[in-house]
Amino acid sequence: MQCKMKYGHGELSLDLPDNHVQSVIKPCFPQIDDPWSLSVAAMQNPIASPALSQLVKERRPEQVAIVVNDHTRPTPYRFLLAALLRDLEEAGVNKTAITFVVATGAHRGNTGEEHARSLGPAVQGYRIINHDCRGELVYMGMLSNGCKLGVNPLVAGADMLILTGLIAPHELAGFSGGRKSILPGVAGMEAVSANHALLTTGGIGAGKLDGNPVHRIMMEAMGLVRPDFIINVVADSEHRPVQVVAGDPEKAWLAGVDLCRKAVQVSGEKQAEVGLASAGGYPRDINLYQAIKSMRNAAKLITEGGTLVICAQCAQGVGNAVLENWVAGAKNPRDITARLKKGFVLGGHKAYLLAELVEKISVILISSMPGHTVRNFFMTPAADFEEALKIVTRKHGDNYRAVVMPEAALIMPGI
Image (cartoon, rainbow, N blue to C red):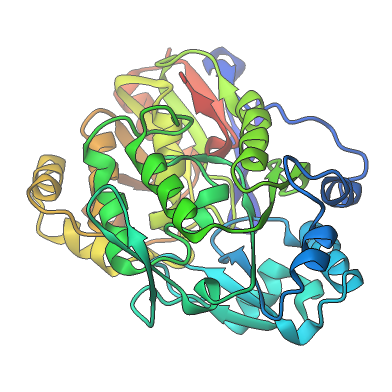
């Protein structure tokens, strides 16, 4: 079997003899002939909400804030924003009244080049502001975890607030999109950190919403901020829309979640002793911080003691100083998991999530990072799949069977 595996902006070749192939696991997205029409149709047929143009005519907002994802999320904005901005313009909203707020959460802000690449040409000439979780905030209320919710002042002060985003499996929140635009998207560091700290309490995981404390607190945050309208997208592995939902911020998002779940859910867990995966290419493999999400998805299909080979270019390296520092003094993965349970630190949570994984399986990482950096994270570096498979053969013998996952970020095993 020959397979092209996404790697950064390019691909790597995987050449695996057929007798080693146990299964190939991919998401199953519907084929859409005209993805451009999806946004128009969604805006014309909003879910549990008046049309945006009607809301504008009723409210006559002087300041409109549109929350958008940062560059680490492969949201196909070129398909979304043209329809959204057209509706606002036709309803009488001037371009100068609109501000795009980039939902960075605790990430760094986009550069100008990243704004242009991720948001597309439709936003040219509009005001675009990166959220700063440590900057000025407006207090919105208290969350049930005892944390104060502060949000970006442009969001809090808008006469009309519109959320945009991508619906996909998420390792903590169950699914991305919807309420994530508020928390962690435009929230203060205190709320962001407290929400991530819930990862050790149980109930979290890709696809899990019921009983998920991370999701519950995010919904509380959205309830305090009360956005007016949402437009979210489900996208395939080529970042093309397969469904766009618009309307009520909760009900429209849940409708998108239903389709996403059907497309990405795969049956069974622990299918094989070896997994061969791609993190999905740019931007899902922009750094190790992001690639860990795909690793955890793929690991669910591998038996304990098995091996995961995953390609993730990590062109920007580890991607988070706290994550890098947390593994620097660790002698083994258990040191990391024990440390986080003693005291949560944002960034350290990614070290915890990776440590949980490498305690159970071996990970061979094909990346552009130096070998010593990969080894610091208790993984084995490899230059390509050919080298990685030699390592696999030495460990598992000549008769190993592998599950192949070309889009590990977009599969959801065992939910």
